Image (cartoon, rainbow, N blue to C red; front, top):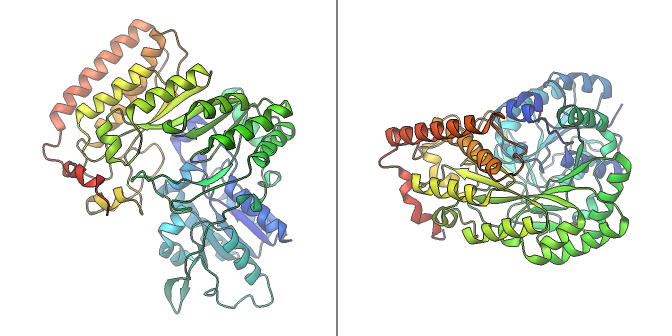
Length: 497
């Protein structure tokens, strides 16, 4: 038996795009929460949905562990959890029902729980942990497993609970400024060898994840931040380096993924981290995310010294007008500089690209495509603007959102509002940009993008396909363009509320 069963509801099997990629990672934040409870003396088990077939597998975990308390603790470091996909919400609600039917007390934490607390309370959750949940979880579990298990929770900050039949908030809880106190994730509670097998079968290599920071201090107005808000807290550079070193020795991955929204905000932190890793003699290639304007010489040098293999940058657009509208606080020239500097240090530079932002025209799209063709990033991830609750972007378009306010899976790419073009144009654009980048890289004698979306064919065939695809896309663009999109309110975005 376990006193507490922790779980999450992201099943890669239920997300066709991610299942095809097959790059699964253990649920870091769930495992950090497990460490917190273990340190308080509780017997803890974890149901890891990532490699499970569907939510029905949770029933077997309940039967095996017979917990008194279930905490559905989503991996808040996983961007897929932060997308609040409806298929995973369905899984979460089903798991809550199973736990309640088994007689368990149920708490829940995650982006969707914070955004939609009333929905989860109605499904049977007794305590919705709002935002960063570890400290709140500790108090709730202590109450439920203590001498007064039925005492109301209204005196515990950071919750949404039902009181007198109505959902209420117990007040905001500040985030932890020193996240080292949470310890390292309890990786022993999940089947690491199952992850190794999945990776090796799909890619021939094995990657594991870790995290060094929480949150993001920047103000991109489409970026949802239900867990940490606009706060940013950093672990000790030495402690993070030591975890990377220990992980390399214990689990022998071929690669590491830093799941931070922004890894290494400060160049001095990166330098200390690199010094510690170098001194250990460990050389574990890793991938991380950052911003173009943070890629100064000291930062890039430290990343290269520490073994960084790949940096994903939020380039978003090749149009300065759109970048300014997004409140990205970067310039197109900074994108160019970051790509050049990383390349000079032998670090792969990859771009996140976003189409469909309010006010974007075909000229803006062409500017983005031209920048990709000019800089030849080592890989790209392409999406369309996705309005999530709590963002200024969502406030702009919320009157246009219909009953489908979230994507079902990560490959949905449905336009949720009235954009300049309909969904089919953006879906074709997504494929066309991948195809064009792949062709241009081949012409330059470079390797194919790791996430290439196009089949490997002879060069002349790809030339013909790219030409045909872009001619058809342009013809479609001219036939379906919204002549008076509400997105032309774009200047309003640069005015402070």
